[in-house]
Image (cartoon, rainbow, N blue to C red):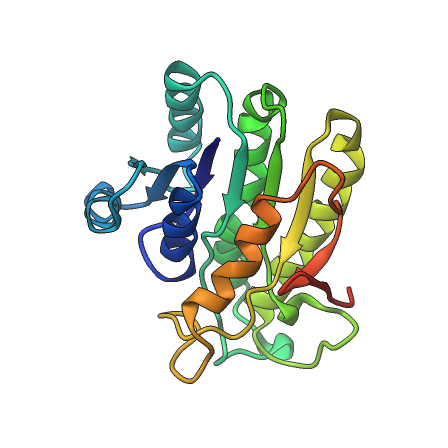
Length: 226
């Protein structure tokens, strides 16, 4: 199985790479910095291949697709993990919309472009899976104020998840949004649960059986309200 993970050099993404490799996947660990990707791949060991990928760069995305096509001819798992701007300092009523736009480039348009570019490779897989790493902050049911850039872009990612799940069902592509929970990472800050627990739900979605769910929003394998 060939899996590509964005933002794989640290935090949850790094742990997902480690776990998928342990399951026997060839893992393409991507990061904006080629040095960071290389270092993480060496430290983790196993069948992990470092690649430079800034999801806001169309050139990087097309280059990554070309590399995967040339080396493997297919992609089995895409984990859209890279995200920025947990903007706890902002409120929706006064948000800097430039900050929101910048967040959308990474949190929404990046995964969207990447899926479009890699879809032909996913269609070559016998068991294609797309995992969009989201957050309960995107749940409209439970939404309050604050973190406008992060929350609205993750809401949009959830919407994209639903659309793609419906459109790709006939191709056998399972597409799900996963909330890892509040995890102790650089973005999440101290006090959250262990990274291993946050990564487990993402790996679950990446390795679903063919009759598994699609178009869902989950944490720890259990549905969350939209």
